[in-house]
Length: 106
Image 1 (tube, helix red, strand yellow):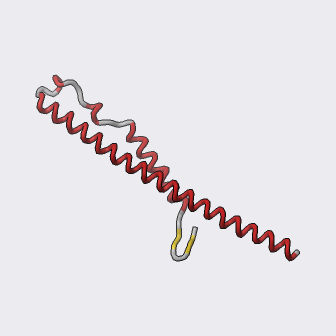
Image 2 (cartoon, rainbow, N blue to C red):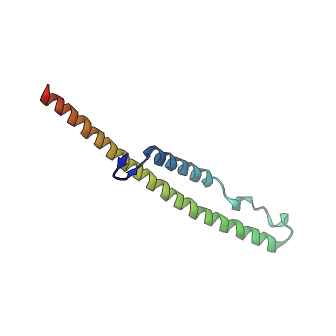
Image 3 (cartoon, rainbow, N blue to C red):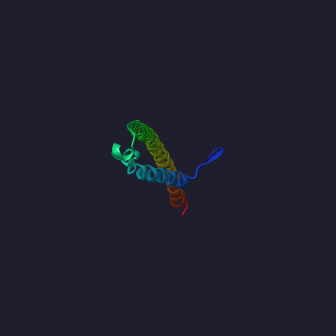
């Protein structure tokens, strides 16, 4: 879609939104907290506590990034939909005008 001084590749926006959704779906199935084993496995309670804390913080931080990526995906999808609707309206207006011109002149 083109406008005064810009060009929008709607397909690229739609593709980016789909890819962003795929990235977040893959992350939903992964958590570092699931990797920590029993305390005895590490030989030191302090180390196990630190690892458990690190994994929990990592998971919380990753979830914040996933939430932002979901927001971005939703925004890109909404923008692409708006551009598609505008493009469809523009094409329809051109088609309708052409049909009316033919009806009026022939």
